[in-house]
Amino acid sequence: MLRRYVGTAITVALLTAGCGQTVHMQTFEAQPNTAEPCAALVADLPDTLLGADRATIQPESHVMAAWGDPPIGLRCGVPRPAGLEMDSTLREVDGVAWFPQPQDAPSMYTAVYREAYVELSIPASYGAPAAALTQVGELIDEHLQERPDPGV
Image 1 (tube, rainbow, N blue to C red):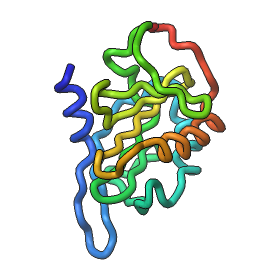
Image 2 (image 1 turned 180 degrees about the horizontal axis):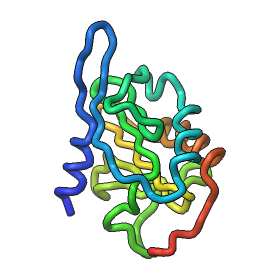
Image 3 (image 1 turned 90 degrees about the vertical axis):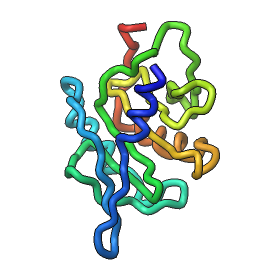
């Protein structure tokens, strides 16, 4: 299971390109019926998150975003997180439930109980993730309807 966390953390790699930055992100197969609400969410994401400027991503996508160096990455419409169980510890921030991974020192947070799962990877160098979870969570609350998770 630890391999999944390490693999997910590595899904975001920074590449420099000229005067700006480009972040290469791992593509994924979006869950059915998530493209439209995820694209609306990503379009409304801020230009700055935790003091980091939004970066260009490769490949181009309407359901992914990144900021800074090291990169903070967001992917919307990802599959249900491995390890999410009925008794999983969730962190609720302003009405949005987040599944932290790994539990002991999370760097990946997945918003759950919404019409789409949203992964937010935050490198430890940014410090406490609360501000990012709040800022992104407000937009998740606005764009993604609450839904029970049938898998838990």
